[in-house]
Length: 150
Image (cartoon, rainbow, N blue to C red; front, side, top):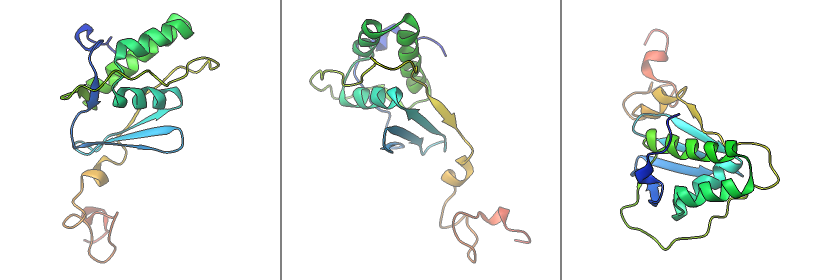
């Protein structure tokens, strides 16, 4: 992944629009891009990064915290996650800044690096129109073209 653009390091970020939805599943954040059907898993530390970014922490504040807590690989992984979230169109600069919150993510005591996992295996179902693109007799989530003889 390319490094984070320097112009974004000190900028607060937010979900990149109404097509980006995120849900916390007990320590794992799943982010869904409704525009292209791709979804992303942010487990463990990565979930904490998403939460902090969504609350208004800057990438620089998170990278500084990572640098103080661990090896350079941790700081590089944090930068890579943020760059990936921006590159995938999941985060953008905030339209309305908020007071600068203190990061809550905890890097100490873990050897795991943050990761951003990407999936597109369900994109066709996510993008399907549940009214017009499904078989009337079988229903969701079976698309018309997936029904033999349809």
